Length: 90
Image (cartoon, rainbow, N blue to C red):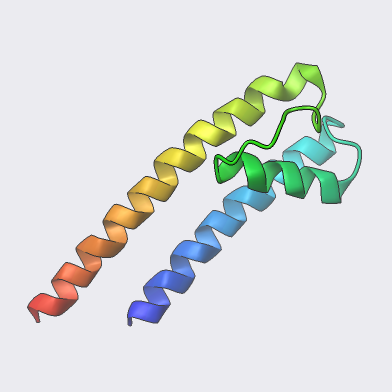
């Protein structure tokens, strides 16, 4: 059961990263899909390598993705430990 929770959380984060990458690529904010996926991953994980990978008009979306990533990664961690606490109680 625990592995299912972990895989579901990873899958949800992956979907969000890919969704942002598709937006960056579809709007032309980033020239290639590989670059868009890379930029989305480093933004979502709040590594934030640099914003030269994205056009200036879309840099604010990259910053928003970082804030969203930080919030959702923190929420996922709290959710996971809450679920572990419930599993241990039984």
